[in-house]
Length: 110
Image (spheres, rainbow, N blue to C red):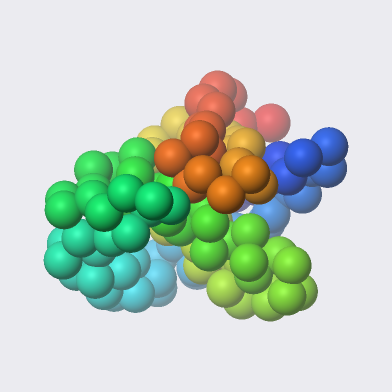
C-alpha cells in the first residue's frame, strides 16, 4: 500500500509493504500501549488520545523519520496510520509545530 505524505509543497509516496502491516501488529500494539498513558501533543497534554490523535502522533514521528532518511521507521509509522485509519490514502503533516493540525485524506487507493 502507498500512503501519500504531504509536507509543505512536497509529496512523498511512502510504500508500505504488506509484511509491514502483517508483522507490525505487535509494534503497533506497543505504540498504542505507550499512548494509553497519555501524550504531549504540541502544547496540550492529551490524557487519552483517540484514534485520529494517535495517527497524528505517528505522522509526527513519520516526518522525523523522513527528515532522517530512516526508511524503516517511515514505513512503520505509515503502516501504523494505514492500519488504524481504514481508507486513508494521504496525510498532510503540519510543520508549524502544532501536531493537532495534521490532516488525513481518504479515498480510493490509486
